Length: 264
Image 1 (cartoon, one colour):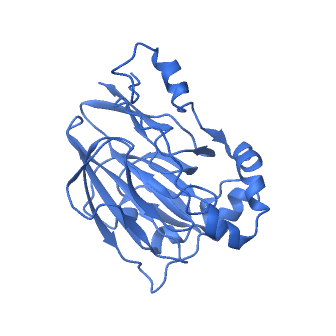
Image 2: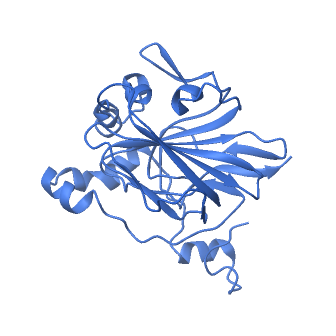
């Protein structure tokens, strides 16, 4: 059931309330997003985009619906997979990329749903909490001396309007922040993996405390320039987790859900 900010104080039907608050489904196919949301911005000079457009943080209504995990980031969904911890999510130039690789943890042993979201230069780069819980984080340094660029992926999405992860070498190498959230309602952890671009290896938490309580869709961090965020949800014996989005659509953080939660 949808519970908006005003849901406890009004008898307005939930679907009408959601529209009033601005929470209508913002999911768009990749081509529609490029043609409608990106076209005007692409005509602006890079200096204007960098100074006035990139760092925007628009006001959004705060939604709470614990029947879903919401998107942690604005961007294009690159992949939605249910995989074993050592199973390849994608092959990058013939080299498999697994959850253990992504999290840099060979002891990770949980079959999980992973939703990969690529944030282009044209996206809002503020990340949000998909499901309420207590947040802890740790930074994982680049494997090489420098981060790898993400420009090839962005060009494929924006210029060629296609999803192609074959050139995503950054997934293996770049600096990343692994955020672990314990969700008491679900009695388990889930993870948000933030991967930085090579230009500015800066992932900035808004609160430096560990084990910090966070509300659903609360702003918690920002990544500079092109970057990627993966939502990783271990499967549960108590709950059924079902993806609600497919690769190739554009989603908005705190507005669009990506995983539905049901009882087993």
